[in-house]
Amino acid sequence: MQRAWFSLLVSLFLSVSALADDRMSHGSWSSQFLDGMGEATTHENGTSTFGILCAQGSCRYYFANGIDCEPSGNYPFMITTDAGALTIEGVCEPVATANGDILVYWFNENDAMNRAFQQTPVVGFAFPLTNGKFRLSSFSMEGFNDAIQRMVTGLRARSDSPASSQQQELQMEIQEATPEPAEST
Image (tube, rainbow, N blue to C red; front, side, top):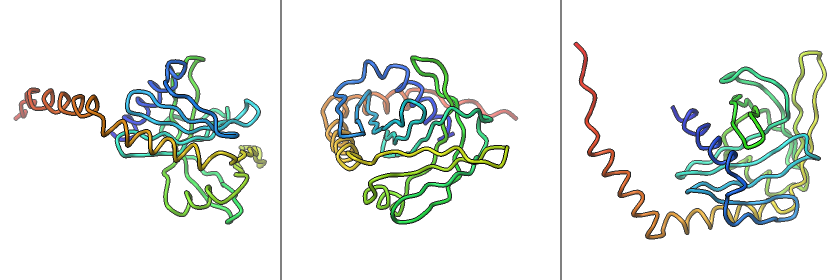
């Protein structure tokens, strides 16, 4: 369920990213906001993308490299930093964008990974291919800390705003007014 929710949010976010407000560059990274979501992202020469998307108190990293995958399938890859290598299992999900559908590999963030990303100048991704080789991607982390800080601060400010509180109250009222489905016997 959470995977479907996050995919829906990303589809919405990426498909209207041109409409996102407050897009700002931070070295090799950028940060932006749209409808209660925040994203920090970087690109590798237009061939691969690495980023993090946060919404409603939950964040997930994503990696896109143009390689086809089976939706909802798990795919292993390795991430290298100055702190060492991390073996990751990403979940493939199609995401609709303004430029067409793309396939992204989602993976959860954790404290050790966040610290490694904050302290390294470059992050490398090694993605295994079926021919026994790897596709390598490398991302500059220049501006990562600033992009993350801006995104986190911006999301907190937006969630504390009166408009956000009103929107949350409206969502709760809608949920309370929606009748529960009848149990089948």
